[in-house]
Length: 312
Length: 114
Image (cartoon, rainbow over all chains, first blue to last red; front, side, top):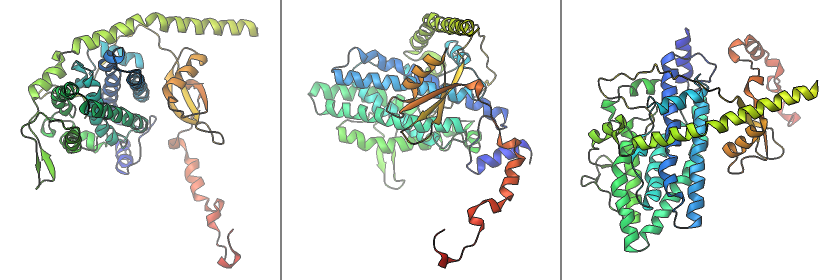
């Protein structure tokens, strides 16, 4: 067997590829791009929720939100570590994100206008993330799959706290329920866009499936998410903003309307409501934090020199 | 959702990306966590830190936010020396030595559990 056949045999046997194994260059690069995009999504995803930490309605909700945002920082770090095993450095990935050469999930380019957005993001955005990440726990690349197992455990808290917060709003005053409905109206379609273009417009899906990086197609995951979410909206007494949404007895799935793909591509290409601000904030934090990184390095070097002097 | 980077029709995926770097990164550390007394430390992941003290602090924040461990080790990644299964003709040989396994011996049932 040549190296490529041996690699594919490991993948086909549902065994994992580990960092020191031979792998096709395109597999390595595809994974770096995907894991980096995933890591950046976690890090940029701290901003829309960070926006509400100081204005959370109670101390309890504030503590929850801080824990969730801290988890997202942690998820970013697990993922950057996984990407690093493929031979790219953390700093390189930061740089590419700041230069706009690396992307992150477009959902984070929408603004968080009201408190109800916090619950809705937990319910829909984290719900969509779980749908995808559960699939990724079975990904062929060991470090990525292992990272996903840890992340999925924590995402469950994210989704449940969000939904519970919406139950509170939906059983509260008419104004609170209206706020929850407004949030659903704004987040529904961008959440469906999170699953990416139609399978017919995803030229790389076939290769990713053969490599078992991806196990379920975009359209199938989107359908799974809709089927799961509709009864949850019913329970809240909220209306999903899609006139075409209806149960299809024959298929055993919900039919739903078409995503606005022009909007999708516009936001992917940088023209969403918040693209510029998100990257500017991220870059500023990196630049303004440089002195901390440098000081820690200088302190470590000084301590090491001191230890050598003391030993001599 | 998907974390594949969407590529519009007619555009290339542009896999050849590089960034210019000016700063020197912190060294990498491997993190091992003992989940509870009585079991070994198990490798859980890695992180960057300037020194052992901050590596331990970061490890606690990153890997034990929900009581996952009662003890944490951090070890500079470049201090780990590895033996890869691909180099290991020894493994094949070891697998041939069935007589090293307890299951290689037939003991009559009437002797009882052994």
